[in-house]
Amino acid sequence: MSALLDVQSLRVRFRSLGMLRALVTRTPDPFIDAVCDVSFHMRRGETLGLVGESGSGKSTIARTVMGLTPAHAGSVRFAGDELIGLSSRDYKAYRRDMTMMFQDPVGSLSPRLTVRSLITEPLRIHGIKDRNRRAEAKRLLEMVGLGEDFAQRFPHQLSGGQARRVGVARALALGPKVIIADEPTAGLDVSVQGEVLNLLARLQEELGIAMLVITHNLNVVRHITDRMAIMYLGRFVEQGPTEEIFHRPRHPYTEALLSANPQPDPDAQLARIEIKGEVPSLMNRPQGCEFHTRCPYAREHCRQVAPGVSHAGEGHVYTCHYPLNT
Image 1 (cartoon, rainbow, N blue to C red):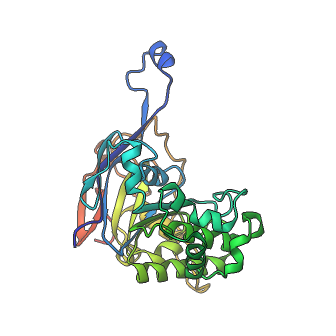
Image 2 (cartoon, one colour):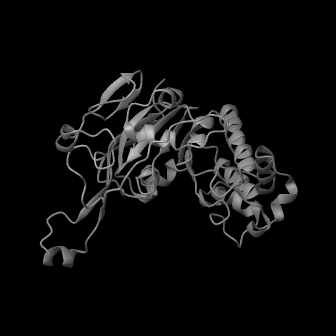
Image 3 (cartoon, one colour):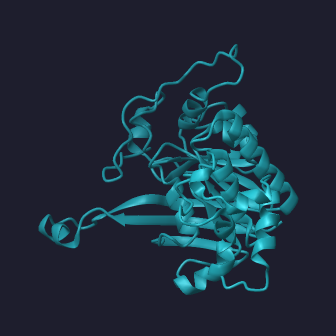
């Protein structure tokens, strides 16, 4: 099956100094790389999880795929069509097939609109006039497990879980092929998190939607994703099937994240691997392997030479000179 969404060698840069200050300080390259040489693909009905610490570049990837942040280099292809370089007007047509759920379930909803207006707003934005808005709102609310009486409510009248369901319904309004979910369980109670994840899994199975899930919650990743990618300083350090990475992580950063993940079994004792030190600045990336300043297994070679991409099996890749579990 060919890729529905195919991202290759993506690079996103942001200016770190103004033009005048860069001239005064004679800074030849006043930019930072927020995303460096990232590649991944998603097939129809597949879920990929992006995992990493805050500031690792996860949300920047999502915004670039959606055309909200410009790419410096690389390729983003949807159903075979190249999206990089499109004008905002041309990109709009692809946003009928790709939609994004933002992190704050309540804050991402306009407080001035009713739930019915929020859910059907994408129809108005894209000029779809051949659907009955009231009927569409009822249908979408039913899909996410909410009654028709919610249509007249405002966001402040919703719980966090209800607001997230409204966000899911809004994301489904145009019948997308890809949903990008940025921290879909953020701010929700544990029991509600499970309900939302089960809802997303059910809808994905019924509708065949591909999902890109951005999160730091590894329990979410294990519950809902087919594959996962671990990010550090804007790069993928490991990518592959979710269960394989959970059982046999190859990169020390992945191992440390997994060891810190809360276990549902209180009797399960895992040795926690502490990541020492602060995350390096994007303006002053370490030489060699960029994780060596915090890696408990780093050797001299790691400090001098950046690792290339190695393969551990079908679809499982990593960047480490001395991989684990080999």
